[in-house]
Amino acid sequence: MNIGFSGKVVLVAGGTGGLGRDVSLAFLREGAKVVVSYRKEEEFAALKAAAGPAAPALYGQIVDITDEAAVAEFVAGVLSRHGQLDSVVNTVGGYAGGIKLWDLETRILDAMLSLNLRSGFILARAVLPAMLKQGRGSIVNVAAKAAFDHGAGAAAYAASKAAAVALIDSLAADTKGTGVRVNSILPSIIDTLPNRRAMPNADFAAWPKPQDIAQVILFLCSDMATTIHGASIPVYGNS
Ligand SMILES: NC(=O)c1ccc[n+]([C@@H]2O[C@H](COP(=O)([O-])OP(=O)(O)OC[C@H]3O[C@@H](n4cnc5c(N)ncnc54)[C@H](OP(=O)(O)O)[C@@H]3O)[C@@H](O)[C@H]2O)c1
Image (cartoon, rainbow, N blue to C red; front, side, top):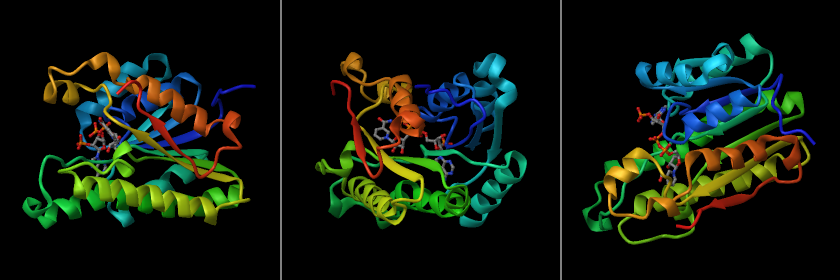
């Protein structure tokens, strides 16, 4: 069986971010055409440089993934340029923690819901008509361990990630038998530079690397995972 993505078109929302960058590079290495949304030109330039010989297969656009009209236009552009969309990975998200609920400003709750729930909703709504028409497709939404592990100080974050998992679960029921598969993955702490800076005394070796999580996402999007639909997959490493 082949995990290769040659001839496949993959959209990675937030595709230049801490996790998204490695997801984009992993798909490129497997031969996919990769379209990323990004926010900072320098991050896209760095991704293009890291892609090396696969760079011609990388496309990118600045898009606010929480903006429904912008995402609809973005997806329409991908479909008109490539004629198909095989996989969509949503790595857009945000974190707010260490704040007791009574000190939590409502705007933080709104921001968490927007980044962690609305992004996945808007992306799924935008890509599903084409995927259903194709009779195939895979969506992976990045949630978090906090969707199930609701610790102190993270009410808005945990609630937004729990809602994101519920969204994908319900969508899995909606898409049963259509050829479109949807799954969530649940990182705990990823070994990224911002996390190392925020927790300098932590045991970094216990944290899963973005490259290792990217492999799980590739597997979920591949033909090797055709029986996996509506799953929420922990990718905690040893943390
Ligand atoms: N890092 C962790 O330890 C960890 C743990 C559990 C779950 N997760 C989840 O894993 C996913 C990826 O995390 P990460 O560490 O890779 O985060 P990240 O580095 O912040 O990557 C997210 C990317 O999405 C972009 N983005 C933010 N808001 C956006 C918007 N409205 N429209 C379009 N793009 C937007 C960010 O751009 P800017 O950089 O410009 O904001 C960034 O490029 C997130 O869903 C996160 O919640 C991460």
